Image (cartoon, rainbow, N blue to C red):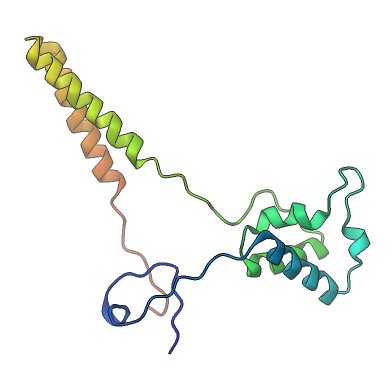
Length: 151
């Protein structure tokens, strides 16, 4: 049995399965998939060359698909129909949690400085902002019920 999952939740049947991590396809492989789709759709590859910039339109469209072969085929089909993409469908997230935790620790340091210098306003300000920041951090990580496939 083969099961594909972008994330291993580590429960149920996934506890006993062997986990094999696949590497992402290269940019060249994605462009080959797009070129094959262009030929399958019966389009002329010369039509897909951008004369003003000297680079192929496949390279431009490849940025819309990321490293996903299914999105690459979809982008070619949409371009054939004359649909224009405004933004890529794939996402690459930037993790800002370390920055948030560092800011919260800075407010904790302000609180301790206020305590050490006997400055009540600094002590109260640091404590209140630390508690408020931790509350917002916890509220930001709350996720509602999500409907799963098959339910």
